[in-house]
Image 1 (cartoon, rainbow, N blue to C red):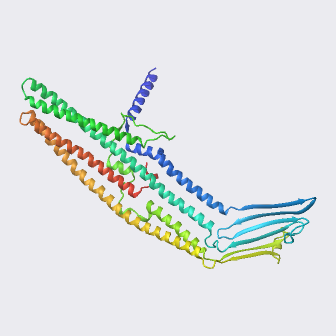
Image 2: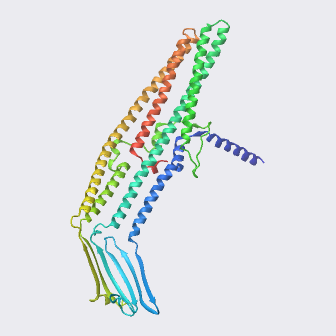
Image 3: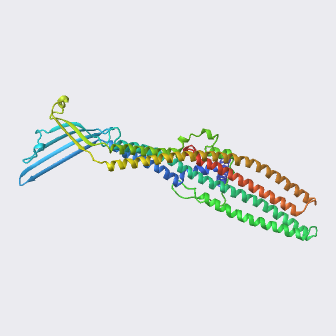
Length: 467
């Protein structure tokens, strides 16, 4: 019985703990939730899957192919012709197509060139098109571009996920700032109310001037107004956070009003955002996802330029097939029986081809200019981001000391007021300065965190490395 009682108590305590856990939302837990379930993150991953499907489609251009061509004509009891041609083709990487075929034709009015032995005719050979390219064919270029597109999509996916995580984190720290500001006003509202009630009672018995009671009441009312504004700002910030919270089945989650954020230490933010130990000299610009995305676009444009150069070549198509009636004999293909063909076409002015090549070169050069410009902008952004983080870190250290000093002055003024050596005006003045300093400290912390998040967005840390 005692064991059952302990189990029941443990169950109640465990349930209470879970309920308590639901009242707060930590930064790391929040970011993990956004990364796992936000629809835009899923869309980014879907884009990567689509690029991989494009590569599979491009590789299909090298799939072996079986073809069957059959024609038959009978009229008034006469078989005009009965033609059957089957073939098996294997495209190769360098534009040469291997082909094996078998044809069997018969009929009263058969075209003489289609006459074959009674058991059919076998052939094996190759075909190629010079204009289609040899070192770079359209099929080769399609596969290579599909591979480059996967790399480009991966980089763009990292940029997109990084941007969503950045915006989500901004929403969280704004929510945290609003929470801290609300807490400040709640604390000082309580102080103002206690002070007002105490001075009011003293004024009623004649120990203090009635005007002091009025001044204390005004301060109390101002604190009420400030707290109400802070509550409104906090609720708006909480709703903004809700925009980034989703369940696994793409159902939005509304943040309940009694759920609060958890204060974030700078070291925790660095760990969650994979910024710990990151330095400007550690970042390789060429491997940056944004640069990689632009570079892959340039690589695709270079492939287009190479293909357009092929258009300047003569359009030469050729094929050569060995013929035999005994394919089971390996050396039967080594004979003088053959079927070959050659087709030549050469545009006189090549204006269409030269125009296409010039356009491709211009696009390639435009892409290279964009790449160099992106590199320069990225270097400057990284430098500015690191500088901002360090600057706000130094400012935050200073404001913390200022807040401590203002608190000391405020507490000393309260003691002097209690001893009758100060006035209510000075106490409220010191309190206002202390409140302003505390709010500035909260604001500077928010700016410091925003600088870290801007650094996170600029460096585009790998989303897979984020918890």
